[in-house]
Image (cartoon, rainbow, N blue to C red; front, side):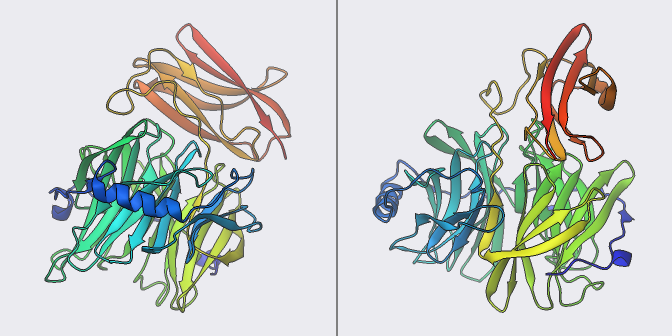
Length: 449
C-alpha cells in the first residue's frame, strides 16, 4: 500500500446534494431469530464448546482482527497477536469484529458452514461468554453481516446485512439492534450499505454508502439520523456503481471512506478523508492500494492520529498502520501482519445516563473527562448542555494563560464533543474550562510527549 504523491493529495470541492436516493428510503423488514430462540441457543452452545480459558485483554492489545481460526487481538504496533475467540465447528469464518466504545464487549459476524445462515455474536472483551444474539437466513444462496458498529451510549448495535434472492438479486440493509442489559431487540432496517455510527456525540447520526444503480450511476456518502430523517449527502462520486465502500468517522465533520473505479487511480482503491464544509465537501487522498489491490475496514486510534486498514492483494490480506502528521497526511505506512477487518479499541466511558430511546437531553451542564488522557497530541473533550444556551470551552495552562478557544457559540441541548490538537504545546497539565451563563466546570488534562 502506497501513499500518494503530494501533487495528488490535494483537496477539491464537491457540492453536496440534499436529495434522497430512491433506494435509500424504503425499509425491507427481515425476521431474525433472537437470542431466546431455540436455533440461537443451539448456535450459542456450539460456539461456547469451542472456547477455552481466556485471559483478560492486556493493556495495549487494542486491535481486533479476523483470521481463519477466529477473532484475534494484537498490540497496535503489530506484536503479541493471539487468538481471542475460536470459531470451532459449525462456522467457516468470523468477520468484522467491533469493540463496544467502552471496550468492554466485542461483536462480530459468524458465518455458518451453511452460507445461507449468519450469526451476530456478542462476547466479553476477554472472549468469554460468546452469545448469538440473532440468526439471519433470509438469503436464498448467501447471507452476510458486514460493517458492525456500536452507538456512543453502547445501547445500539448497527450492522449491514447483505443477502440474495432466487434470481441472484442482491439486497443491502442497514439494521439496528437495541441492547438492554443482556437482552437485545430488533429495531429497524433501511436499504443502505456500509454504515457506521458517529461515535463521539449524542446526535444519533450514522454515515452510510448509497450505491449507484443502472438509473443513477453516482455513488454517495450520506449522513442520516437513526430514524432515517435529516438525510444529507456529504460527497458524490460521479459515474461509478459501487464506487464507495466502508466508512470511519474522524470527528463530527470528517469521515474516511474507500473509493474504487476512480479514473485518477486506475486498477487501485484509495482511502479518502471527506471533510464537510459550509459550501459542500472536500476530499483528501490519504493512501492508495497496490495495483489490483482492495482496501478494507479503516479504523482510527483513539487520538485520531493513526489508521489501521487491511489491503487484499492476490487473496492475501495485510494490515497496515498509517501514521498521520499535523496536516492530516501520512508520514509513515507500515505493514503489521496478516489479518482481515481490523478494529481499534476505543475505551470511551459511557454517558452518565441512558434514556429509554437512546441519547436524550442531559439534566445539567457536564464537562466530561477528555479522552484519551494522558494524550499526545490530540484528545477529544465531551460536554453536555441541558438547554439551548451560549457555551464557551477554553483551554488554559497552569499559569492561567488562555491557550485555545474550542467553542464560543450558542449550542443546542444534548451531548457535544470537540477535538483539541496540542501539537505545538509543551508537555504538562492543562485546564479545560466550560462556561455557560453562571455555570462553570473544569477538568485537568495531561499532555505527554
